[in-house]
Length: 112
Length: 112
Image 1 (spheres, chains in turn purple, red):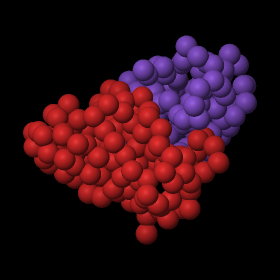
Image 2: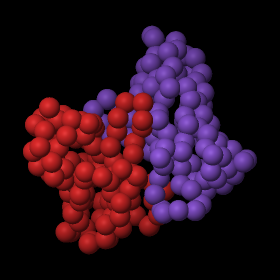
Image 3: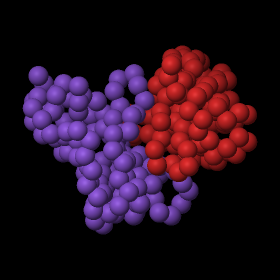
């Protein structure tokens, strides 16, 4: 079953605010990915992380691969209306088949 | 043109009917996946294929079957649809490893 816990499940913020969300696991992962899904579309990859402690940015987005290999964080700075959507974390476990496990998603709503 | 396409985009059917969802890709990827998305549950893997004629069960394969007759096509079938199979279905592709998956736009299936 699902082994990634993503929080918060939803966020309602004002435009310009910073956003933080995280994903935790009971198992060790060797890859963490962050996706964004907009209405009517499939998820699109934002950031990929491959090494414990790694910190990677993509514009206003920054993600980190936790030192324990059991968590990851995504931050969005100075949010804008087009940041609205559902953000998913995904991971690949060291043991097991070569497939991804997804978190439940964080739905981000921005008030202008 | 989109790299990963899904047909149909929307489908309403009745309990007991056989349904097939199609996925096509022009990315030249060898690996293809079918996911199901339900509110609050994120994406769950149904089946995946690493090459033509290669089929592997995912997390929730019961009630579903797949066919990979060509590298570019991966179809998902519901032999006898039931209401709790109402969901958003996504196809995805990747190459090499499963780290970066590219998703189609999704098929919204409603089973009455």
